[in-house]
Length: 112
Image 1 (tube, rainbow, N blue to C red):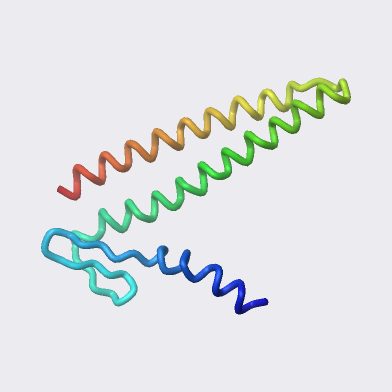
Image 2: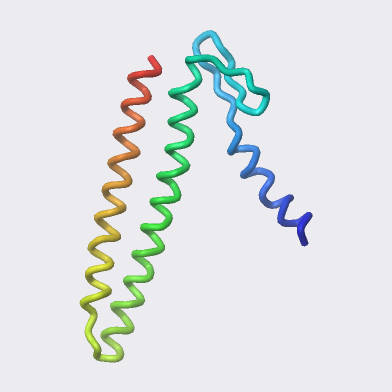
């Protein structure tokens, strides 16, 4: 079972250690060949992973709020908590998407 889990996670682990090609330097984080040009690209990669998790959590929260609204209407106890959760989940998703766009713009400007 442990070998199957390691086999399933190995493509994700391989993607977690990226290899970037900067202007004159090859940046491979697995071997330690780094230069100053690699830092913005590495930060962009780490931040994109973090904001991907944030977007995933927002989608999960949207699904939970949908269930909360449906159950609240079915039981008759009200659906205010679900609507509030949905509002904040959508707001969080929008903020996360804007953060990704801003960070990618800044990294593209710095990396040039």
